[in-house]
Length: 395
Image (tube, helix red, strand yellow):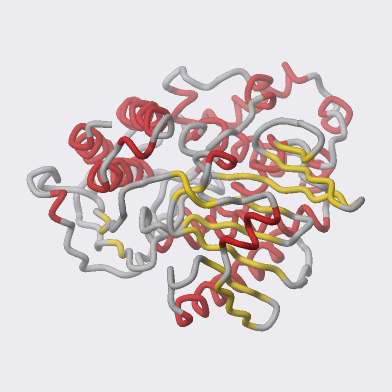
């Protein structure tokens, strides 16, 4: 979290300009490129048992947008014969370029703007078409409706969405989404590295930050801020056959890799891919609190009321209760995949993203594409593809 004049951390942002406090939250959830599509899932993995024990796990069925895309040439000889789904990804060589602040840098960079009612879409000149800006505005309004409904709010102020056709600069290292509540700004990475349905889910995530920051409380406690936004977007993730944050956290717990609750609460959440365990755990904790104690209790925690006062128990007892809440999901299989196989691949992909963000410019477009595909594969519980893509990427 960065404060212009005050330093509060890495992930949230508080800026003080002319006496106005501007609060922003950074995320690196998945996003979509302009021309990306998703191939139709095959029957691979259908023999595995797929169970759902509570809200937030995998649905019995889901629809898949797009379809029929042919994998790019970088995938030749890499994809196993069977796989749940393979996306078509089109990226340029990565570089840290696009700013999220200060205000002056934003204003001189994203200079092409198109306004549609209450929503303005801005980007570097010529990076996207006006028609594409209109589609982003439509998706943004849909995200607003969805997030408002989930939060029980009716926030409808003007806002601006900034599209980044290249990676964000060091001031938002690893971000794929970033929201500044006070300025009513949402920044979205849209460099072609991910598929459309993920972009829609992340837009809901960022819209949750924007609405909650203006109606519930300024986003000071990143654990609850990210937990809420990831909780809200979970419906979108599972609707497109992605592993839910609740399920992934139960798998990490089963694999023995879940950090202590206090360590999760104290983390900086610096990049969703690099901190996937922490983002998903924060959402799983939101599921637990809301299902066990109710929405108002989670809102109280979001507003920085002490956990022991709100839930009436010390953090150690709450942690034990949360773990018990995760227990029914620990042995669940998705696409025939369980905790051990998924975590083995996921931990390697997380480590690779850590190396990648040390210097993205050191990698080619093909390497970036293959790394992206490894991430998409673990999101769909496809560790075989994830490891194959990762090995081919050389990251």
